[in-house]
Image (cartoon, rainbow, N blue to C red; front, side, top):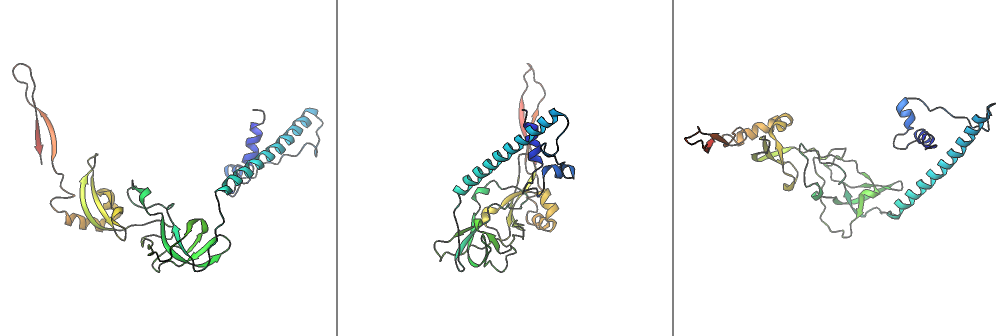
Amino acid sequence: PKWLAWAEYWYNTNYHASLKTTPFEALYGRLPPVFVRGDTNLSAVDEVNKLTAERNVMIRELQEQLLKAHNLMRNQANKHRRPVDYEVGDMVFLKIQPYKLKKLAKRLNQKLSPRYYGPYEVLQKIGTVAYKLRLPDDTRVHPVFHASLLKKAVTPNVEPQPLPVCMNEEWYLEPIPEEAMDTRRNEQGEVEVLVKWKELPEFENSWELVDKMRQKFPGFLLEVKENFEGGGIDSYGRVYKRTRKKREVGGNATHSNSTHN
């Protein structure tokens, strides 16, 4: 407990690669104060000199322990890494699983979506860990990728799997509705429409709320309304209600189910 405050201060005043600054400066908007070591600026008060000496020892110990922890994490990570080198002309698969499918509703079968696309030809090696690939002409994605996103194709005669046409520059899919397949009501009583997305396979079809689809794709919903005129989106189907009849002689109550269209 004696050193926790100093350990926290040391951590918050050190540069973080993810923040590109120190946590202290990110929070307060200024550089942290610099502590002068006791051996360079002695005080007339002996207790102050003792405190600064203890602080210097603690800082050195913290630096050593953090360096050991850093080396340990790096060594553990390197155990699972292997040097990968591709040559110009090699065929590689492209991994795009980390990038989300930008839909109105979250897919429950996200694990079943393709992990790799391709294979694509390596055109150029850029630096030590980046490669430029020959992507389809209609692809909007930048063709340079890190080696960790590539996997060498063992069989060069594999039929290439094209990238989705609706993928934007940020590797997000922006699907466009192509056809309304069916309608239904969810447990909350909201109307949903089964949407077939343009340029995407059948397993990407998803149930979307009609209200949200009206807001995002108003022109498409006009077609949906025409396609399901008289029996789809605007019809509420059958609603079952339970009614109570008048109490009969003897005090027994009876119930009946009635159907309303």
